[in-house]
Image (tube, rainbow, N blue to C red; front, top):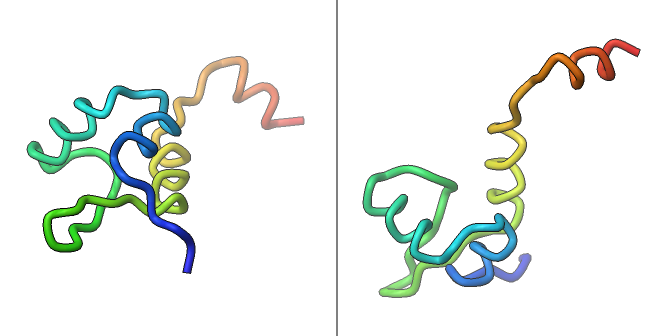
Length: 67
């Protein structure tokens, strides 16, 4: 089992402030998280999947992907 990341480490990986993840959790947004008792943790694979799912295609990336 991979180690789970707490909110500060997950936020750093995503380039966000920990408070942003806390707000997103309250709003039922953002990456998947787990609650173990009162401890909130994130799986690194879930964070990477969240980033991959939110990619934005631009004209330049569409040209690059055609080659």
